[in-house]
Length: 366
Image (cartoon, rainbow, N blue to C red):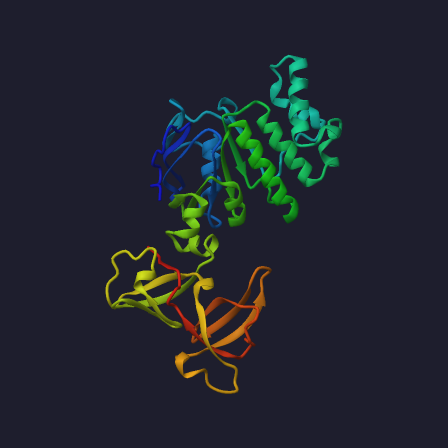
């Protein structure tokens, strides 16, 4: 895993040791990140984690209280010197698009090009509209466009001035799901082709995984992990990441020798991707991947399971198809566990099953 704030090669945009307070409330605590040209970083976290505040500080919409912001070797902002957005080489796109209602689409796109010659401004506007397939809307006004069309216009307007850095705050949140996926793909390709370093705030883990080269996860204003989407999925460092990105389920377990004892069975300690310094007798929280737990026996109410599969059995509370897999919700006392089962299984609600953790993938939360 890349350490938070660690440089990897030549970085063009760098936020260093950003901390922020609203009164006595600490919103952000010592946040650092670095981006190459053309790289996209998503900031993900629960509500109130400080995502939008960090983006507003990067944009110059919120005064920088502590730390510094650099572009290449140029210090853009520091404590006591926080220039507004128009004095920074950044493009901004927000959830509400913020298009000028009294200007046509073409005039909106060309708004930041007022210093260009008319012919060059027209060429650039047409080029951008053509890149998103909206040339035929040039003379229309924003209120006649769909949400997806407005989002595309907002994005190319921000790209019109060739900003070194693009800052996006939930840009696709107001668009329906099928279109949102297409817009994400189009936006990612456009930003990469433009060579623009991009920071994007989102509350949607799927969106972060689809858009990002790096994901910074904030929880209560603290950076709990900065890594690639694949690394966060395989090796989450925090319960929020495990549950929202990696799809792990949280169980309590007690360390006993070479095993972690849970309410559903014994997990080999060697299976933990993050074991740390566990002490025998210690109670810990585990993240378990349900697709790696095996049903080893079934009692359907008509008799016992086979002798070679004897073991404690757990009640099946529900069976659901999630569009990819059949999952069974299994209960033991006050805890529940979702496991992936074969569509050919004979499982029914009310059955009792034996489970094996021999090949289970799991992590211990720090």
